[in-house]
Image 1 (cartoon, helix red, strand yellow):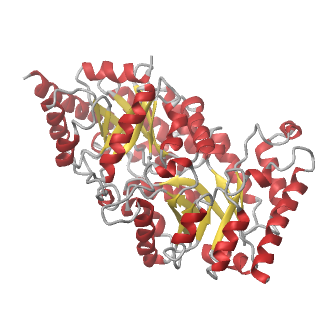
Image 2 (image 1 turned 60 degrees about the vertical axis):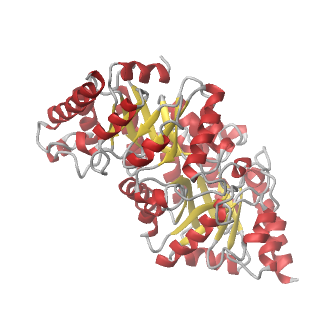
Image 3 (image 1 turned 180 degrees about the vertical axis):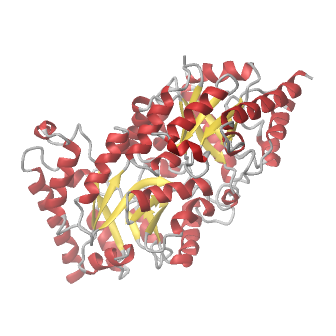
Length: 271
Length: 271
């Protein structure tokens, strides 16, 4: 099943939550540290508890790379636990000159076998092209991010009146015409900008990080997409789901959190 | 020894070449494939042959990540072969929201113990801050890159008349005031823009990839820095040094290539 089909099926079931596996050894329940591979153990439990309810999983590479080769091994083991019909996003913000990006694309799509990746557009088209060449994958390219630093570059105004992130979104739409496999990353903390730019992001899946602990509201985001009669989006939720409970009930609690979010979404779309 | 001291000492000896270890299993001499760890073996031989002549080594993460955890292990083993007084750059183009960038910085500077990294500025200050907080390290932030895609975003004109990459360079100078540990990545293929912007890049080390196979000229770059009476730069050379010979003499050939480049530089500065 290609990446677009996986996400579309979940979206049609009104599932919009992407569970972010930003697994931090300092934040997982401390009893897990007795396990041989605590990060893998934690991920496995979270996946078992949430797989029926989630639309996707997102692996944040930083939290694994901090352990070097062992961390990469934990990514590999974690991916084995995720059912085939659920989209898996490599949150790796890749982007480099052509021959280097080719290697990154091979790493993400052939070695690890992810369905999807996050990419940084700063270096332009040929830095993304090797990823776009994988037709059955989905490439989420940074538009407007959820962090305060989005003001520094992304929101600066161009000569033609657009903001930099708006030009980037326009370029993503253009690049999407090649293989229809580009998505847009748009920070959930920017709800005003989302309202203003959602029509600009036509025909592209939107990945929205920054809801929950970063300040964005899941409900607000869903309402905006509903208002525009769209279902093609994922709201990434990490800390507020995976660290919602510090006891042996952490997985049960994660399940309850995602069920609540799905109910909110159904309430909005079905009323 | 901190990163700035390492690079300054080599620059004072008129060494400006950074050897890029973009080690590709398909491009290394084929007899090496008999070795247990061909990538490590190749790197070790290249390092032994070039360490007296190089100003720095740059590890291009893509070429290692393509092998997952094994690739990260090859990075670790390669780093052990590099003498302590030579700057080692992690070419990883990192940059993410604050708590994620903290993990990336830990990975690069504490787990792998690099001296330096390449960073992508698109997400703004807080995405780079965790790296800048390491005072003794050197953070090379993308300004203008060497690839054709530099036209897509980096060279677009802002409302205030600057190009995007010029605004980014101005911001890097600002960020450099915090801990004096920011450098600028400027593609060696852009010699016209280098001439026009070298004065803008004051007080920052400049890393110039793109010389050699990508089309930039080492000699031209050195002449520009010489004309502005500057020595604070590194020209990355990868394919034209490490793949200059396909036989058992590949390391000897790499040594000869870098010696030639050093002679060119000395000729320019001493005449």
